[in-house]
Picture 1 (cartoon, rainbow, N blue to C red):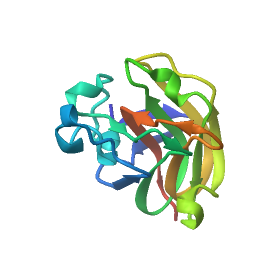
Picture 2 (picture 1 turned 30 degrees about the horizontal axis):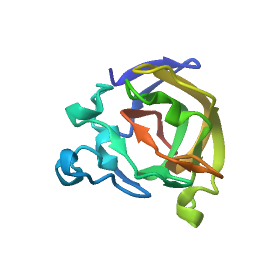
Picture 3 (picture 1 turned 90 degrees about the vertical axis):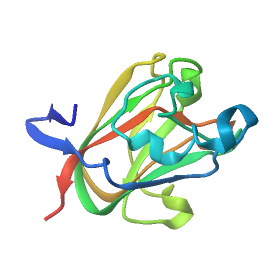
Length: 161
């Protein structure tokens, strides 16, 4: 679904067709050199929560893993919807969603839209961003070792005028 009613604003998923990157890419023999783990998988429009179907991103275990989508120009963002993996969804616990125009610290210094306390396995949860404006949307796990896995990130908003 690419259109959603959010806070009396009809907006589209502006992440589709954008570029994405992350702090690392899981590469294991069973992952066919990492093709299952690329950042772009989290904005492919496919909410399939099964990592092994090839539509989720996945970092290595590392300190403060992060993922970022570049919307190419500033957007007014009303909501972010995140689909958790159907296993290991606890890896998202404590992550932050950030929005802004800076790439300082890989974009991890931008304003916080939301804090993810938890998302149930295989579920898509929507976070209200109240019209924050930014070119970059980051998801980061600060201050600890972790693995960041995202099966879909939808960014609902429109280009800033």
